[in-house]
Length: 78
Image (cartoon, rainbow, N blue to C red; front, top):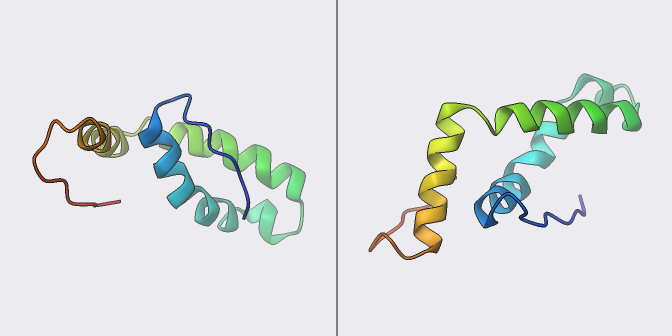
């Protein structure tokens, strides 16, 4: 999948989305049925909600602090 993740939500959101959105789209029922327009709309909306889950927010916060150098060592868990 080719996409531009602009990071307007922060570099960590762009990075997380690049790593997880393709699989999210591929798992979508409309995608599996060949309805790409519907699949993209559904996947974008549900992924947006996914980004608000507490576990994801905690990971995004950790990713942001790693990039800003607030932690001596950052182990990738994404």
